[in-house]
Length: 302
Image: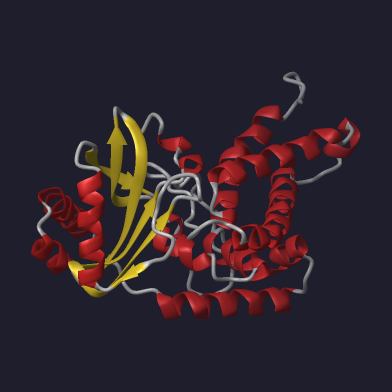
């Protein structure tokens, strides 16, 4: 696809890491993000050498193209997810996955989300509730710190319209977010949760769950998973005990999931489920269990 001898090739390929990080935050799927980046580079190398040399900022060009591909993908994704079997959860990723250090702060004084915050499952789930334009404008500005004039060029709207899109997204996100517990405390709660789950201690489980806890599963119609969320500490705890009875011979391991403490269920060394948690006020508020094997490919060697 490219000429290894081309001047500037190294600099162009260095953008790949940031592009994947951006695309993943925009579409919530690593496999789709990789496809977006592949298509972006395909378009770059489809141009003549003269056309490429005429571009003042190749990094900005690549970001613009990748963001526009994501915008189109988000539009079609809504229709696909309406046909999805059961609940759709963003693809979980192993370990600390920032990919990039972001950009220097632009002049806009609006509060911004850090790259670390923008990768956790709770945040990604909220992004799913935004319109495609809101999501792209918000992520580019509030997370990656692009000025609204730059965002406007990418999404094809005026800077004022992009400011409104980001502001609307920010309000909706703030309305659903609460201050998370410190990571060390989250790790303790997840460890205690693991022990209670393995011991099938329903009282211990209930004590760790928020009264209004919500548990969501994603099997994608490929493996068995709850088609609808469970809500309330007693209902969730009871469901977890049913799962424990069916998976007693599997191994439950503590792992980092999207930068936060989580759990992984393995069978003969193969990951068959990943659990992400949202912890606040010393209780577990949300549990996301991903079983769809297509979303667990990055966990093969994790």
